[in-house]
Length: 103
Image (spheres, rainbow, N blue to C red):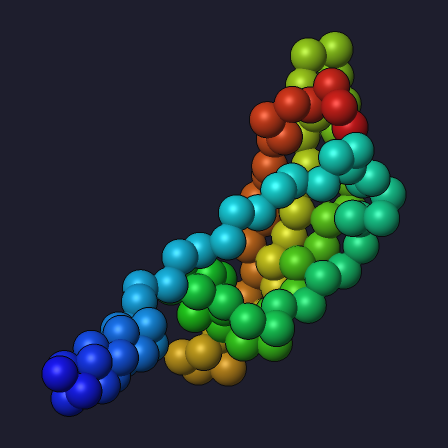
């Protein structure tokens, strides 16, 4: 009986170490302060979908907010060095907030 209790305790302890981790729930920043967000942001880490895979020494610049009567558009630029041949690379892109009237 004692062996069964010890075995059960060992199985319970071992199973506690083999759980599948879950991603944390990330809340958006509200209210969002665009002036603090603007400027240069240097990439320290990336994932499989990251621009950092195509380049290194990456920097994203958020220079301007364009507002019209309907929506807000944030213009951005990624610059870095190509991971293949060490030549400069740059990508321009735009983002649109989901709730643009909150900016």
